[in-house]
Image (tube, rainbow, N blue to C red; front, side, top):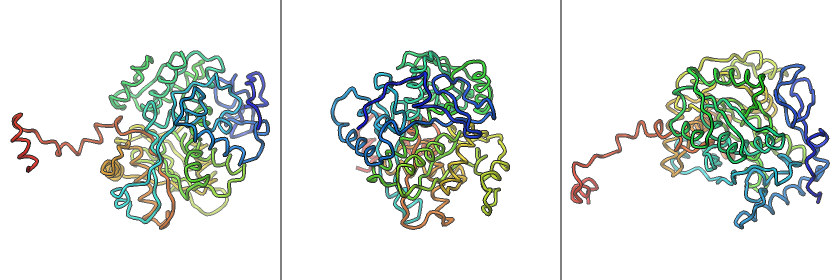
Length: 449
């Protein structure tokens, strides 16, 4: 086994950035703009895996399984107590352990869908949920946040900034606080829940609200990056590295096999981007079967799905034609506020991965995504409205015959429903019974005892 390598931030021979458009390369630890200076495109993080275990899939998976077996024991080793850094050799192999900023994120349950959800989906499939809301800040953003802040700290960054629909701001503020860094978050006024607003405040972040949508916040954020702000959004590709842990955990859970489909809600596109990047990596190391990706958007914010539907499936130029058909949209109202994005920053990466892995896009109607949240609640799982989008997407894809009977499907539940209590309970107020007094007899009568 190779020994852990010392991080050399002056060299690009271990880890570097590569433009997804023209192939331009630069130093991850010196980059601050996160846009290619030649073509303006986004970057991928690249690693020299030959310096770790080469192309030996079994050497990697054995290491990861050994770490997973130790999670019940106390350890200060982040590769044991973090479900993200467990896969360090695939995520950020050359970062010294002492540099890692972790809140012990990422050890999340993968559960079989309950009977209410299965009945609502209405198709005989092997359906599972990975509950990524069971994390320190309550969303999947922690998977990427631990890596982003670790890279930022290693690079000597002292302050970060992000635009957010709520979950990114909570993650950025919490991890920045843990690292002793300053944090500022930019939110659309009145478009995040009270719980989501409370989180960055509790972690000491500077909160700036704008009288517009997330897309307005993101436009300002990108202009601030050009002025020197360090971004915590998925514009920064180090976040994508951490989000890959979703795929690695699913594969490990199923004995290093992947399901037929993985379904995710799509906002800015970071989750689809990371699913594809992770599966490319595993395929490179010899994994035979990968998953198809189902990207799901609400009707109110569906620019990728609408343009996907406009693009003819025939021919070899689907990706290029899809990009030509894409148009940003003015978002409507939806309970899935965390995915209320009309101009996804990571759309080119998301499109690339969806096409490469023979994926599909689905649009979820508002009534369906809210119903999905409700039926999950009856099974004991309080999931967010964005998870409802992904579940409604699975139901729609099954009705269209894309997902066949007997198929294995994992839905990424991106946040805990406790962040979205107002929308989740809006139609359930009728179940609250106001007793007329404080007498036991009164309550017994209500309970028919």
